[in-house]
Length: 344
Image (cartoon, rainbow, N blue to C red; front, side, top):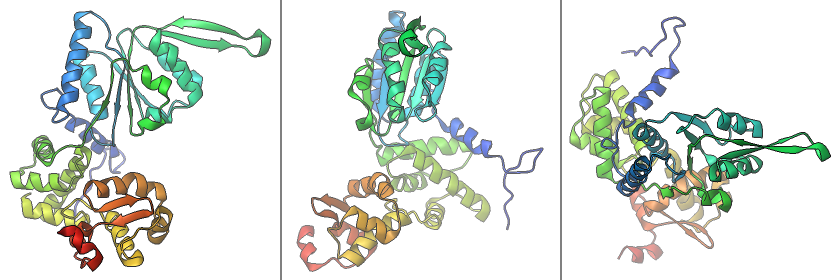
């Protein structure tokens, strides 16, 4: 049985906008719909309520943490709560000082400026933000050499909300200017992810049993974005196979995607197997592992290792990466004798 991809009415080609619009639809539209991050939600409620009572714009806010945990969603909810217009951009998109100056001077009073991946902002451009955030002014230098002069433009009151996955790359002067607070988003529990998946399934019009939602949650790497991605692929599987989306169908769909019961992908398992089979379980250096599986060092260090370490399958030691007995067991490989004492 063949499946016909969605098409635009005019061109006949698949419409990529449909999937993007779907992701927007799955975003929580209110604080009650936003599941998890209870501590952050409470602090934001106090911050926004206090600003509203004083008839002021909220102070600048910084969100950080791994990708897919809801930093952009929180920014959207703040805009809804304050009934403010939100202008969105990203660090890499602001290439010149003039780009940032254009954005800031076009803000209206009470607007929210959201900058994603702010750690990738050019340092020269970052310095323009300091007086804008602290004093509400924009310093512009006109001319060059001895005839250069500085003009100071007053900006309307605005709130800067920034998000980053690499807070260590932000300079101290910039971090200190987020007077509204710096909030770290935590990974979600399986129960929270299951609730998110059930809500998304309702929006998608997909009947989903509780045990099927928990099955997706247990393989979602503790991340809502990954959970919604897996749900959509399971929905596709059920549509094509003309089956209901129960726990068994979810398991079959995720197996086809090479996502195992712990949420490991084929790349995750390749890292563990390489260390076990080629380097006797380690310790082994990052460059050696990357060369062994033909993967970039940065991808291993930033994408795969954090999850493997969180599950207790991999350790970083002063001598290099080392696989744990739990990884042997998960892959169905006998645990070496010298590691068996660790299991006792």
